[in-house]
Length: 354
Image (cartoon, rainbow, N blue to C red):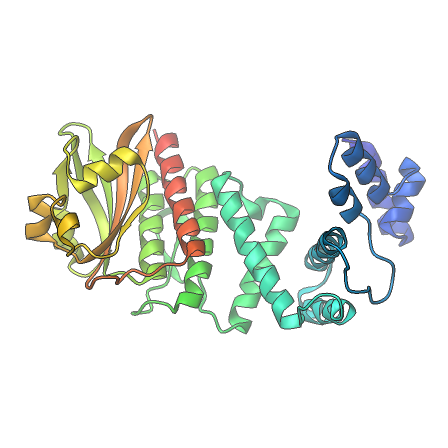
């Protein structure tokens, strides 16, 4: 909306070095803040949200004495953090965040380090959401800066590079094989990077096989499992079969992992419910009773996780990962959410494949 007016405001900012509010007032007769508040009020937004859209006065604000004021404080700090990411040079970003922490230190119990972690976690959350909505962050002005900010932050926090040195077919990046699995603190970064890579691949029409490989390998690197298998339905035989995988005895596992669809065993039950399932202890008698004979004779993993994928209400694929001891797969709620997003991206890739 108001495209020509926004362009005129941008020109004023560039040529006259005035503030955004001053430029907006000259072109629109009203500041962006007041325009936004007016729109929110006309749409019937609750008053606490409308109140939170107002900036705080200069200087150190007082500690909030109500939930309404607390919401406003959080909103203002979030807005200023966003402004730092969008408008501050990378080498000045740390100093700007430290100044922000000093200003709000008495009213918000977050130092510069905690605010930096907030930014990092928020970027990963945006990457997850973008992947779910099939949006490429790198193609937006702010999104590209967020991705760059996260990449710059990773080495400073002692995190390994998540976008890696290995190169798959057609330029799709694979996670680096370092020979061991990352610490839990790094799992989210690896998963978020994988989500971002697949988001880009989805809009650029990479081959389905390449995308599924990246998804499987991202899961293998992130959650420290013994083995990950990517399985798809064979339309001719009606079997669910492993196509490729990563981890221990992978080639043999790919040859042996297959089962008929439509049965009453645990794997068909999971595929029918279309719900991600973590079996923490497959040695439990109740679980073993539902495991098919082929699985118990060939695999019998004491712990495994399954991510089913249905397309047009029909089982189309699944991701299987296992560990060599009960409770051997430990993932946080946040990691499960990111894994779920990767699963959804795999479904999107299958849907849009020829």
